[in-house]
Length: 344
Image (cartoon, rainbow, N blue to C red; front, side, top):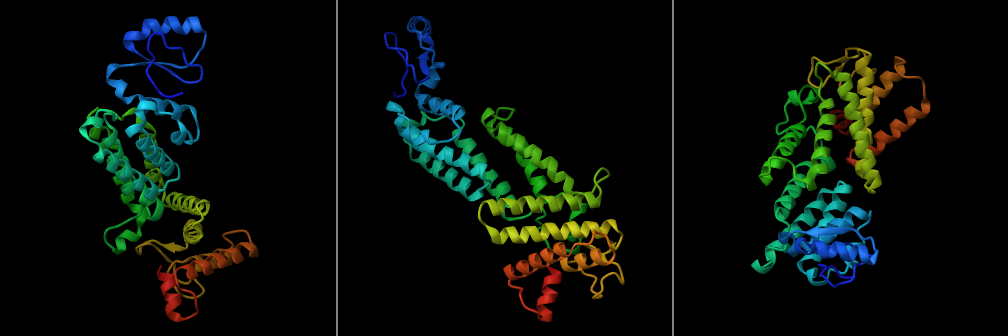
């Protein structure tokens, strides 16, 4: 059954919502009770009549888990421009669920282009804040999701020794996310977050709370920050595995293990943190090299019994390190290769 506004004398639909004008509410109530059908009833305000296609799409989206209905629903006279924009919007939702910044960005760009091509005849058929919301989500994909997906919370504009002590200062991404979260309501001029973006705003706030744990404070120790950073890298590695990007998953798993072993060594007081980023204390590493890296941390943890003995764990971490070096093009046994690995 196509989407349409009910008029007095029309039958009450049995398999679709009943949409009626406010002026027809009394007639709709009478017909509703006489016919005995019990569909969802929606009173449509005058300024919503041109948006009935979007109203119907919103209701279906709340009722159904998938988005297959977008291509099959009969929109009747509201077909254009409703369907193409609904398809773009559902693609945005899929991209957000998958944490895919490219997918979200491409879908936002597609919807924005469709809106720009509409003539004045159709612009009144669009939800009031659609273009603002799409622009907001596009900025979110570029400034937040892309960093979570391919970068790191600890993105510094300058490569200086002080930045190696990443636990000493809040991640740059945290500052960006807090600013973005505060700016959402202002972009719409509403004084509060629009209902359609509440889930996004909640996610931002929860993620900010977690990112705060990556910084050593009075309540969070440096060891705690290292553990949280290790968990962050492990979680990102799992995301890459789920999406079939095994190469990046290997690099993130390596970094997770590296941080976890660094924390183990730090808790055992064999790290000198007077140097930026920390170094092994004098005489701790059997090679004499004080620069921190996974293989050395594993060897130190085994030598000083910081961990329960496990040859299987040592072998697995060794293979992980080999794959990491292979992925970075550092495979081989030259002195230059080993030096580059230790500095990475």
